[in-house]
Structure formats: structure tokens, C-alpha cells
Image (tube, rainbow, N blue to C red; front, side, top):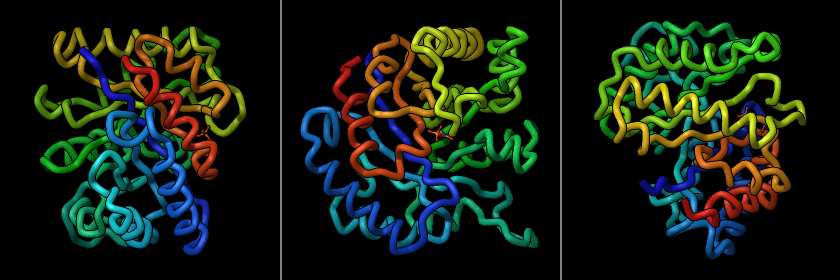
Amino acid sequence: MVRRAYVGGNWKMNLHLDEAEGLAAALIESMQDLGEGGGEGGAEVVVFPALPYLLPVGRRLREAGLAGSWLKLGAQDFYHEPNGAYTGEVSLSMLRDVGASVVLVGHSERRHVLGESDPLINQKVLAAVGESDVEVILCIGETLEQREAEQTDAINRGQLALGLAGVRVEQLRRVTIAYEPVWAIGTGRTATPGDAQSAHAAIRAWVRFTYGDEAAEGIRIQYGGSVKPDNAASLIEQADVDGFLVGGASLKAGDFSQIVKAAGGHGD
Ligand code: PGA
């Protein structure tokens, strides 16, 4: 099965309004110039601005005629309850109102800095897959200590089993997995293509065992952790690397579009 490459740009808690709008405008311009490898027929792309800027960034995408096609708007986080007394939180329906159709769940910074547990992550995944027009990117990955103890695959399998508990096979079609080794995020250290491939193959094997062949062949597995224009090509060549989740380099329109192009030009 051919899996369309999928690249996410996670802006994290960066950029103020004018900068976020400026980056959106620059991205639109460089994406329109991408030609082969980006846009129609190339990689699918989603950008995750900080929550207050979803509306203005989404408006820019819509005005350029790109929103909702291969270029999507996503939210870095949400709360799984539909509404109520949850001070500071936002619901999925609020995100949909402002044009977001993709949500990140279980990002390593939410797990390790904000203390999100696997059961909370699972509640968020279940809430999102329960909505037919929302897509989920579920992030998993091991710490350096766990890698050194050769627990990478066991940690990934555990996070998959807990994060996806109760998700039905037809709902899995709207789920993408992002493998992001914690030690590679924002550190400039990237997994070697071989290490990434080995972790991705084990993730796909878990999906095959749990959900069957069709689900395993269809699910997209992004790699994340210091992806840059100069390492994207060797990573995307790996059979089980289907795209990227990009942090730092997604804040530079030129770098991000080169990564999108590398991913989309790969063709399998
Ligand atoms: P990075 O972040 O590209 O800055 O390492 C990746 C991520 O957190 O998704």
C-alpha cells in the first residue's frame, strides 16, 4: 500500500500573533512554490500554532485556498470533556469551531514536562477518534535512559497499548503515530536512519499484531526529533518512516518546506 507522506510542524509555545501570521504567510508562499514533493500529490502537511493563534493562522490558510486540502490546521492539545468546569482547558468542539481538524496527543513535553499520564492520553485519543472529522497524531517515544537499557521497543509498545486502548480498527484510520525519542527532541541529536527504521518497524509490527495487516500497512508513522532539511532525506528513505513531526525547523518557512519536499518527493 502506498502511504502518503505526512509532515507536521509543531510551533510549540513560540511566536506571537504577528510572527505566527508572518510564518503562515511565508509557509503558504514556499509551499505554493514546492511543485513536486509538496502540495497536491506531494506530502500532506499540518501546522500546529499556539492555541490563541489558530483562528488567524487558519484564516490565512483559508484565504490562500489551502485550508482543508493537503494543508491542515492542528491543535497542540485539548481536554477530552465536551464542556464544563475545566478552567484553562479547551474542548474538541471549540477547536473545530476555529478550523482545527488535527490534534496532537501525548507529545513528550506534555508527558514529561506537564505530567500527562497514559490514562489521560488514552481519554484524549478516545475523545478525538469519537469525532468523525478529527484526526489524531499520537506521540510516543523512549527517554535516553530507557534507550540505553534497550527498552525502546517495549516502551513504544506500552505507550501504544495504553494510548490506543479501546480504539477500534475503523477509528485507527484517523490516527497517525509519531515516534519521537525524547532524547532527540530539541537537542540537535537525531536517531540514525537505522535506529528510526528499527523503532518504526517494531511499531508497525505491533499495529499488525493488534489490528491486522490492512491497518498496519495503512497507518502512517512519523519520525520526530531534530528533523532538519539535511537529515530528512535519509530518514524518509527508510521503509517504515512515513513523514515527520518537526519542532524547531518548522519555525523557519524555508527549512520546513524543504523537509516537506523531501518527504513528498519520496514516493512510497
Ligand atoms: P524538534 O521537536 O524538531 O525541535 O526536535 C520535535 C517535536 O517536539 O515534535
